Image 1 (cartoon, helix red, strand yellow):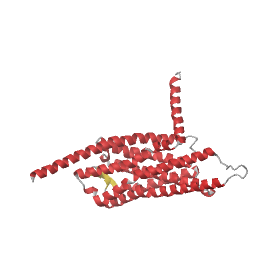
Image 2: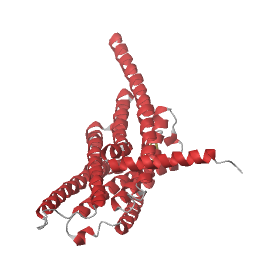
Image 3: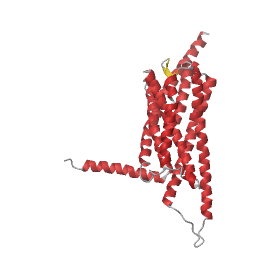
Image 4: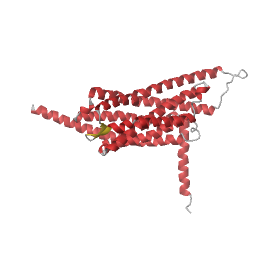
Length: 337
């Protein structure tokens, strides 16, 4: 009996050490990768889509807004998670107000990042439509107010985090059990399942519009020489590449966002994570962090996705890099007066 108890305790101690090491390693390596690559990628997207070749497209305006929100997300979520779990810095428990502001900024920036991608999808749908009145809604004049109103909505909505979050047993979490259950269900739906629906719907509708447009173009043939008129082929090429970039981004979003909502439902209603202890609590922490990291990783690889998808994006990025290198070289060789 004593030997069995000793073996059990030894096994539990080994699991505790294992999960602690696993959490620390993943937080240092994966979160560090996401933070660095995510920042570089988001900045590159903002710079490239600000160039003359892209800046007039409302779709790129939504991408820029999403990238700015992602930069905030990488700092208020990924960086803090990295130093807390990877380097044992208890930042979340330092102050109640830091805890609340950190999670408030996390939820606001995450919502803005994903809904601007949804708005980009809606814009692609409107842009691909043959109806002129609907196509007028695909405009920078529409994009800027939509981005501002969207930001205001989430800034106001997540004020509840400032009320119901606090430091409990050294952890930053909800202080009310009823609110915790409601909030977990809400985050699971709004953060995971719900955004996928409009992304898929408008993506499929855009594909249908493009196919219908191609059929019309084939049918519209000049009776004189058998050719068909092409209006501004450069603009058409840009729109086509924006369609591809968005389609790939939606696929990446869905793949990396599906795991977390499922696990969130499981841990809220079947696992009862708040009552776990020892190695069970550490395993839950590891899986929860890992599935959250999948979401952040989906954002971090956005620029890599655009580079692999669009020759136009690659060309503009190359020109930006060359311009920066040339300006730096010219600054170095210019004699100081």
